[in-house]
Length: 265
Image 1 (cartoon, rainbow, N blue to C red):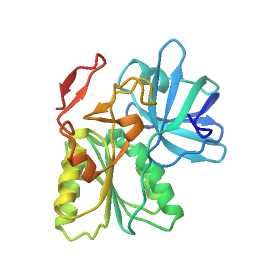
Image 2: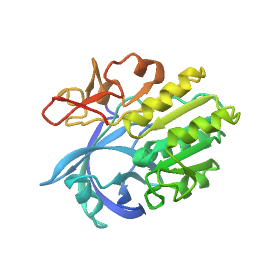
Image 3: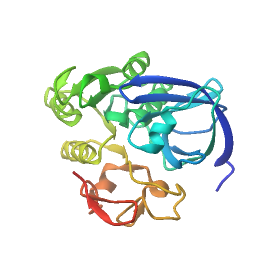
Image 4: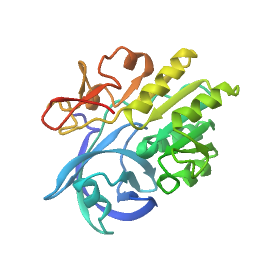
């Protein structure tokens, strides 16, 4: 663990609902983090879970959380002043390339891409963000991407908002219409990431993806987040598309809490 990897207790300063069952949680303190990195949040008596960092600045940092189980429900239920323990940040971050990037998010995958968009804005880069969700009230962080000067395209599986279809379908259609993207970044369900990766590489586009896998330790010891011979917490969570294409488990299977492989649907 380097001097940049911290362990500290902090308090919640804001709990902001941003979509159905989805909250942005802001904690007091400064943290040195690059887009794509994650922290481990310990909730006493509940669990310790990894969370991508979505906000940094003004003396606080934040994560954006979708309720998906006991730990995330407890996290989203925290009230102002609640204390948690933080470890991190950890992991390989995104690398910024190109002047006309496409950021493609499925569901809560928008969280790490928001911090990436902030860094791009600071470099004078304003690209296109495609935000996908199952239905309109699950679209998260739309206003925040727009406030950064990014064009935002929305897609919903049921057609209740924006393009009717998945984020990868919307991305494919934008390319077919002549969009001149020169780099691609994505995060979300692994099947969606696989689709974005395939579409991009067929067109010769460079890109990176932030993978989401079960993590227990966050520092490369337990092996729970393994994908082939890589560990998402240590070798990722950000991987180049070409690297992902070489992994036999990518988009096909992952490990459950017991370490057994299970198919990705």
